[in-house]
Image 1 (cartoon, rainbow, N blue to C red):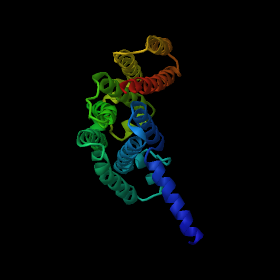
Image 2 (image 1 turned 90 degrees about the vertical axis):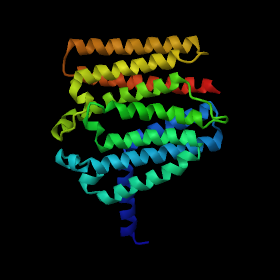
Image 3 (image 1 turned 135 degrees about the horizontal axis):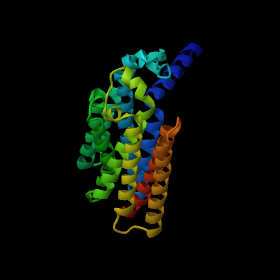
Image 4 (image 1 turned 60 degrees about the vertical axis):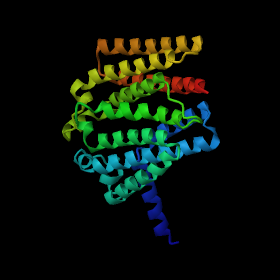
Length: 286
């Protein structure tokens, strides 16, 4: 194979990987796969969960970059592969549709109830990309999508048990809190291109507090929800979360250029804590 063709294949592959929003895609896939392992889906079941979630996340990431390509071009997002010219928009769109088509049978292979729940979450994410992101309902797809993921994993267990409410609610709160935190760095660019979701209406400081509050609520649910909860894990998680929010809030109230950045870091720390609790508490479902 000529070296020029190899170089082109490598460039397209790298550009496609970037267009998936690689870090969030990999994180969500890894966390949900780890949850599947912890609750006893077994090796093959966990691999199926990984493939299912990855296909859904790929379709969401690629469709997001495709649908946002004109807005990204307006604000000069040369870090994104389509406006930078690293890959054609049509290639990304074909990838999004292909991943979505693969997601359907993979989802249903987990059982029809689990499959429909996962597909509902993926559909919600596509609705966000297709326009809900620019409305007051922008948090709704995150609530549905992140609440659906742990429910999908549990519904795929032998006997198809119903997922506990605390697990679904905790996942939904984690997702909405992550939405407010995720939007913070892009508020100015979004305003330029007419994207006005709920975080944009609350503003930078309001969104930072909303993110921290929602992620703290997720911590409470994931810590207190299980009937057989470890007292040490519960108390330790709650104390750590409260201290993080108090420290961030004091910084914001004092003002200064770093106030919102500090609250963003608090939100990221809380998200990590919530994911940890999700995995620890999920293991108690076995």
